[in-house]
Figure 1: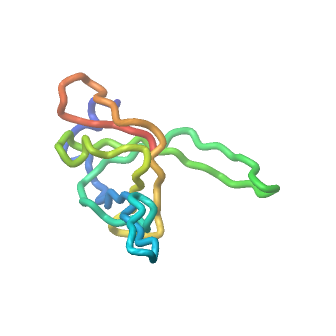
Figure 2 (figure 1 turned 90 degrees about the horizontal axis):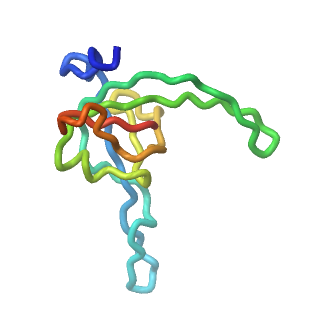
Figure 3 (figure 1 turned 90 degrees about the vertical axis):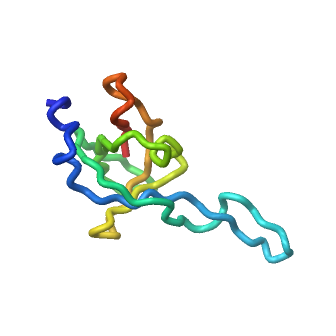
Length: 116
């Protein structure tokens, strides 16, 4: 099933890849990577849901739904790390934290997968 997912037609989502920008500290200095998230690039991606779970944080029950995200391998996508986030380009209320490093699933340097 995973092999069938790695086709151009299966990349149905448009995702903004964002990383934190620099923050002006107010004294003429800049703190790198401490500012708000900024969109670096937007690409098509495929998203497959994994088994979700629930966790209790501060006496609140919260559901989590991890996704396996598949993108084409490029110089832009290879720069992504776990400090970045994804935002759905069609529904910007859907924000995903990248929780795993990028992996080449078939060893052919055509696709990259990660968990968000």
